[in-house]
Length: 195
Image 1 (cartoon, rainbow, N blue to C red):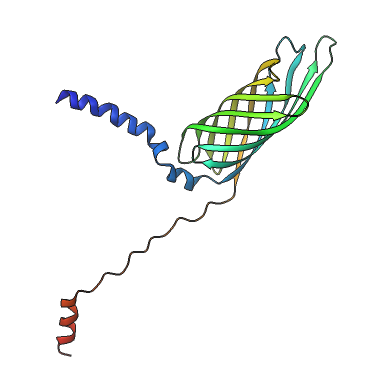
Image 2: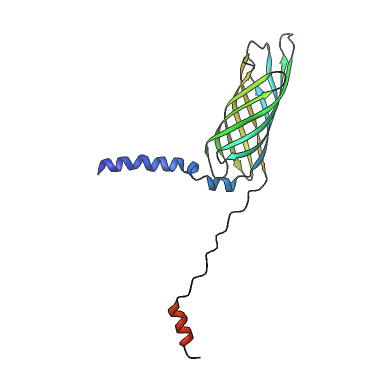
């Protein structure tokens, strides 16, 4: 008896933790299908670059591929200031990325793993984690990423900004129950009953 109770406890805990994941329909109804995410960006430059830390911005236009997966078209601009007389560096790039949510609350808040590829003069790879806190129809977004510039520089990057959702989901299907059928016995009673 004790062994069966011990086996039941992990099952209850797992069901509680995974409930936001195994009920995706509730999530899909509460989250707008599209969003815009403007963010300020700060990059800690490595020693090999020979510049000051970078400051700029990132803009993402996203949509849902699934309840726990978002696809984004991204653009970024980073300006690395000059250091000790060395030249400054500016780089703008654009590309696409994916957010895979480890968990997502019904309102849309959640922790996700991010990865993207951007290109211009050089190819950039960004990968790391982010978190969104949704409230009142909007959200705050923060990301901690590694900025890999053509496998030459591996630099920590912080993005902080907003998630601005837009668009509407299709309405839920309404199931109408058929009217109850009247049995033959009740029909006979009505016909035979005196007026």
